[in-house]
Image 1 (cartoon, each protein chain N blue to C red):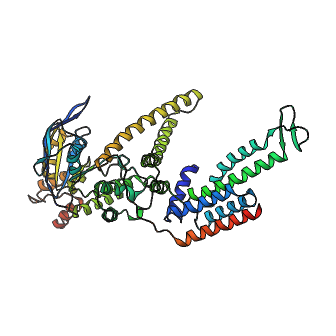
Image 2: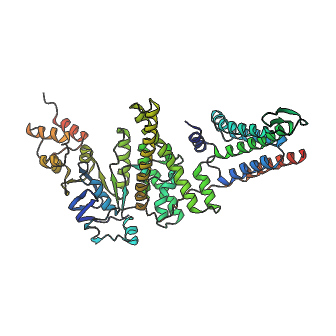
Image 3: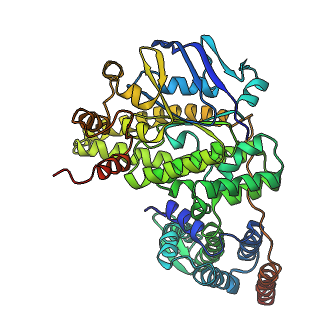
Length: 257
Length: 280
């Protein structure tokens, strides 16, 4: 299973699934703000540890999933940090490694900048992973709609989320059928099969959208996807604990300045 | 829900490029009953169901509710959809939300029902369709049979008088078929008329109070045993005579079954055989 659907599975199965979405947004958003707005040291490692502990502890997200989700992000951030660490050669006066012929250098300053940015990014990503692995997309979209995000945007996102899985299944099935008939045994065959796969999935998506439109109209669809979900109580204890945690991190960050 | 009389009167309907599929079809849906719709592939079963639900407008003839023709304007269709709901063969043609509860609630919300009543209808449907344990699972994590039951729940939450289902047991394993039929029986006891399109003649014989066979663009409606014992009709409709009827006929010829005894299910037949006592 790829990371995307695995995160989705974790969100639906999480022990925090039935918590009010606002609580989790407040917690993860607060941690993100701390990660980005406060000094990278010592705040970034603290936010990272807090996020991971909450994920593996009370939220009960499988450790294997946390590692898989973090791996992709980690590679992305590493590449970004590497590009920050390599700067234009400032001249022989700066300490570090210089490639005079290329006009590039890795200096103490550039390494510090890369480390700071990387720290902020890793901590911020961990707080967002906390939200993503505990909150199904539908819950986030409903919450966003109640907070004023245009209904059309929310509905498109909701439908896209639902049908990504349907189309993934279709694509997988068509690909398997092609592969079973040796459709990917050469470069030429792969190119032909891939283009046919894309065309086939596009046509099926179009046809499915038309049939869905019929199905929705049959249940009185008038242009708005109105649904009901049971209300969730906001836990004062959870909110208080989350805010206290963030206040503590802010205090730590301010003391470090 | 009160029972309403829904009828098709001289309906002609088809598709561009294919010509008419229904050629002056007449059908009166018995209120409160269970009607099975049989016919060959392409005979017009799905077309008939779509005409019944208002999704398709006949090119001639009419669909009536209590003798009043269905209006195809916005108001007319809104009213009609509270009388007849259609569950399509592919559940993914109906399930638009990743949340089971949200999808079931969609229909009642469109009826401008109060939220507390929407909640009550959703919970009622979850119980009737045995979906309570799936209520918090996303629809893309459900099996095909489970998605079918959610689709049925979504249509039933509109509280229709008539629930039309296009091959609800197609593609299901035997246990899932039993679960689906048990769920439909609960809906029927909840005062809903059921119309079920199927290729399964044994199912139609065992389950339905009456059957309608779509053949040559027309409809023959009647007793399941009478119609499925009609060899000419069965052949023209590309159906198959249920094995129970063949065995019952043999038993009649052997004098082991009295006239008028017409077993329709395996348990019926076994009970008849048991009543014969030892034969040797």
